[in-house]
Length: 211
Image 1 (cartoon, rainbow, N blue to C red):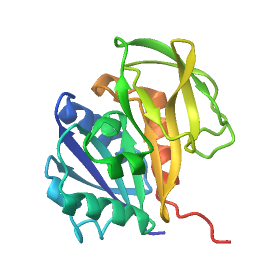
Image 2: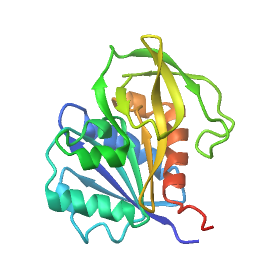
Image 3: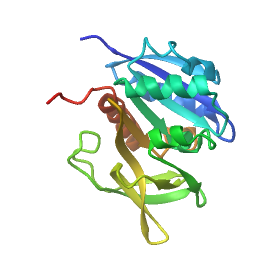
């Protein structure tokens, strides 16, 4: 069976995208179904038709500006039936681009101090979270505003209210998985991060079954 052609894209401001990119690359290398190519910082890689060789993009980026050509290249490619996996600060990329935010399904609002916190599994029947139970992470909790139509898989408590940690959604014919974990390289090396990211990649890269 042919491998899933995967683009790992890392860059941006604020976060240690190099350290996180290395840790994420190691996680992806442990998933034998993926054939991974890594690109750093160069947003022109999103312009059509440069994404055409790929089935999946794994995206770790913070803030920045996206041009119309880059935005259209990425969003149209996903909508054509491809997979997008956004990690942590992918919800804080391109703050001035509502179309990108709509594709991801939510956006960063704030975060408490880096700490240990509990995460509940909301949907243990989904392929990404199947048979998982409540777990603890040491990471930066991203508090997001999000589209209530997303499929929340995991959540944590923030000021007494449930806050999504992982969700899925569709974008056209494509699949989107967002994972809020992964502030730094250490967080990206946790076992649960590996499990969720690998499963999320396989899910996002698999087109929905036709009726």
